[in-house]
Amino acid sequence: MLRISVCLAAVLLVAGSIDTVSAQTAAPAAKPSRMKLTIEHLKEMRAKWVQNRPKLKACRAEVKSKGLTGDDRWFYISDCMDRS
Image 1 (cartoon, rainbow, N blue to C red):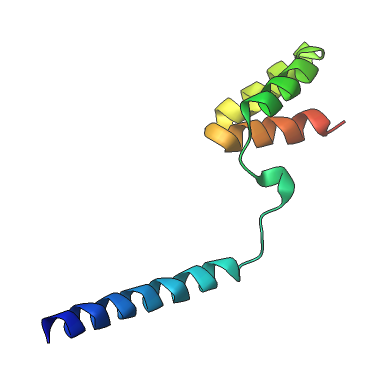
Image 2: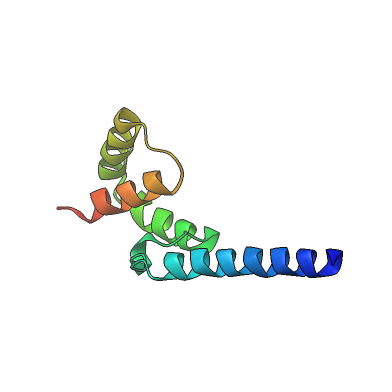
């Protein structure tokens, strides 16, 4: 009887987690440009930005004033550098 109870509890737990996973996969996918950045991609972006140091300095000042960190910081700088 104990084994049946444990198995039933395990089945219910797995069924509940499957519902959660299917609900998460139903959400729209993130834009490819907003996916997690790799170190190589960050190095390429920074190498390109260093060529226009005054604009990079202004974008960094905006990031600092907004208090952005992590990937949000890099995405904001990327958008800022692409603007005219």
